[in-house]
Amino acid sequence: MSATEFGLAALHDAQFQVGQRVAFLMSYDDSSHALAERFRTHVRGPAFPCVGAKSAVSRGLMRFVVGRDMRSARDDLRIYGALLEFTIAYREIPKMFQSLVVIYEGPEVLSEDVFEKVL
Image 1 (cartoon, rainbow, N blue to C red):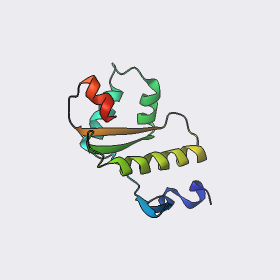
Image 2: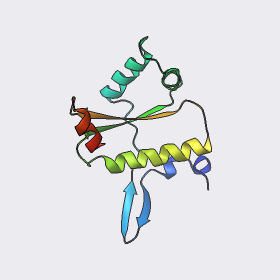
Image 3: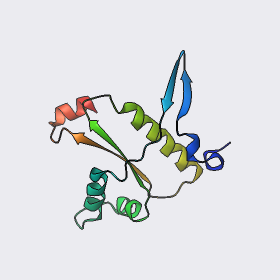
Image 4: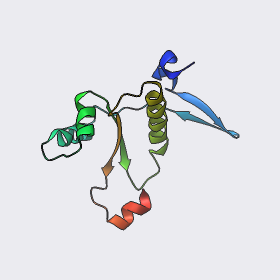
């Protein structure tokens, strides 16, 4: 059964067995988070150059996952689940200008070296 037939809810709380371990992937969309709204406002601004992102925002095709701290692995399963869900949905309905945005609450400033290490 495809993601379209079963609906994206099929992935919500989906259970995948990895060797002897079982992982639960939760569907997350933090679009109502304040950081998501700040990002959408930034994208809509005249200085933002990417017309694809502007299109995704205006069409409601930009999803968000907001993590706590980029230096922590705490949100990795949430991000993985969102990436998996986004990929399956895109393969089923390949609309142009869809985006999945991952934003972190902190830290606000990282050096480029630290950013590359924690990425």
